[in-house]
Amino acid sequence: MIKLVYVLERRADVAPADFHDYWLNAHAPKVRGHAEAIGAKRYVQSHLIDTPANEELRAPRRMLPPVAGITEVWWDSLEDFQAANTDPAGAAAVADLAADEATFIDIAKSQIFLTQEHSIFDFTGGRKFGPDAAKCTYLLARRPDLSVEACHETWLTDHGPLVASFARAAHMARYVQSHTIAPEINAGMAAARGLAEPLDGITEVWFHALPSGGGGEAPADGGPLAVDERRFVDMSHSRCFYTREHEIFDFT
Image (cartoon, rainbow, N blue to C red):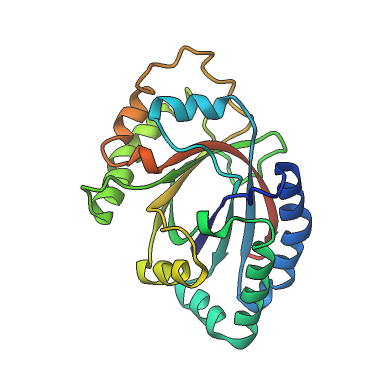
């Protein structure tokens, strides 16, 4: 399967509470209603959690602040995604959803890109997460001196196992890297809708409950994971924050 990631910036004239309410309770049903036309198999919204722990992640890495949330939509294949966007019914559905998104999303500051998931570990045994679960969401821009391929290779083969070595001690439940694919399609979507430049991927780490944070004890450099991230991540164009998932549909 492939996954579309939509990084959402809230419109400045939409209050945070109104943004999250509309996105979940008004926009989500529209997406579900168009699911067949666009060929989507699964749709998840990840809403920003307002917690001091976000600053504990951001500050030592000197990252950008959090965004309002992340949309993720899965298709069986890249061919299915492309077919849905060229089919008249699918194209009409996409246009309808885009018009609705413009009423609460700052399109020019948001980003869309297609990805391929890489599961690093999963200790859930296939069970769904409970309502208290939280997800550390890391929006990754590569260092400008690295190629996309070099960034993805380091991230997957070096950094992934390093994170796994801390998993049990840090009470991590699941860890997925989603690497950006199909650059030409991503660039076309950004140009057509006036979106910001796509990123190089997204890391997601699930916890059964929101981590309590370091209480001010975290090292100034962010610790060993943050130190390793600097080998391939452009921190000044990346973000890391906690979200809570809302699964709208899953037809997989």
